Length: 122
Image (cartoon, rainbow, N blue to C red):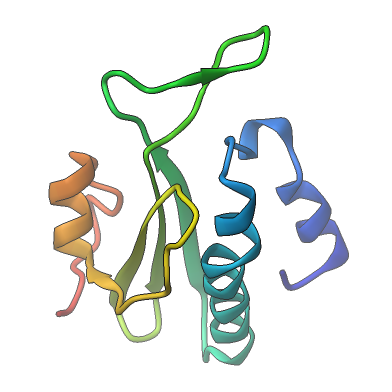
């Protein structure tokens, strides 16, 4: 995060989902660290969109029955290069950091057009 305020704003209850603790402290932590490093050295604006993907029969936890996502993604769009890529992870112990998927593949997997008015280079 570029500033302490931006970091604090990211810790909102609207910005959290249940994660496997070992995944969150392992592969996902590495993806977050690598993303922060990329953003710090980028030449211009970088936009990061992180989110969950729920299975139709998603398990629930707690008395509030919070759904647990099957997958997590982190989309990175570098405005200065017009390139985008995404990390795609199962929300489970044992995941490893793999090569990112393309923006188009993320759209296909989620059904969400994250950057509808932006031409993303391959």
